[in-house]
Image 1 (cartoon, chains in turn brown, orange):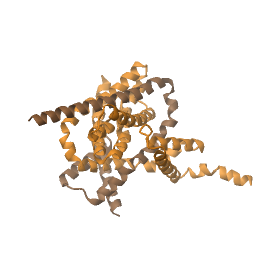
Image 2 (cartoon, helix red, strand yellow):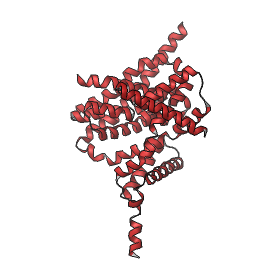
Image 3 (cartoon, chains in turn purple, blue):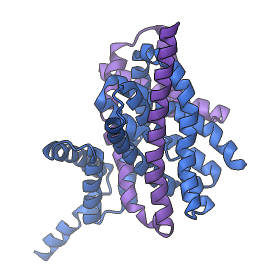
Image 4 (cartoon, chains in turn red, yellow):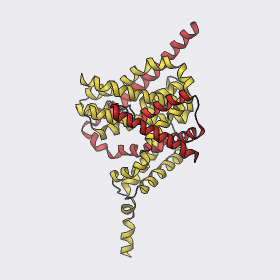
Length: 121
Length: 240
């Protein structure tokens, strides 16, 4: 029961996020708006109820399961990549490699600089 | 006897009309993928999600179930992504002290890294002669699916192509983060989590939660911020 009550809270936040998106024509999904609202609400309340913690953990632990039907789609979409296979493959593989590399180096560099300046103060 | 055989052959067709078939198939593949992953020694280059997806695709093709009708039944699973995204707000809140301590690096890195994630892909594809439609489909490749659909439609790209690119990006981003973490090296799980969410959206975030709760919270943050930032910036940039 506790898990279902927590799930209901998540669903309500999601629906509220969707409603906001529709009313204010925000180019961000209802789920992400709901996530932001959830974080802000919890920060204002200062604590998480057990039922909410329980059902969020349950959902997060099956995140991989939830994205699987979409992942399978890749195998049935390959034909659409055909004419421009090289361009698409290079953009996805090389592009992602470069962007992961940039993120890690940037973040590492900035963390080092900011902790150093923190220690100097 | 032949009637019995005919009815036997018709089983996939009849059963696949109900969503419970897609649910059963997906769950089986999920557990089978995890089992196989453990059996082959948890290799970093082959995440369980890929194993599960390959098996699932093979079964769908083998039973000659229509992919679209599978997708329709699996909607019962995929709709849960909405509330699951909201659920990411809870670890985010629980880890808020870590995030507060890191707010300067996050604010500095995010706009640049999120922009680069789109720019690298678009420039490479453009240099290799991709059409504007393909470019518009590749641009939001690091953005979580619900947001990316909106972006692609706005830019005039193809949604199925974008979804394919998104999924491949998620999987390879996860692999590259694991590899580069060793090579560079980076062992701060806050940085790894952030890179996973920023580049690999929900697939990266799922992987980050396997590393730790902290990495997962940073991945949720990276995914959320990248989604919001890209959704706001990309349509403006593409108009130029």
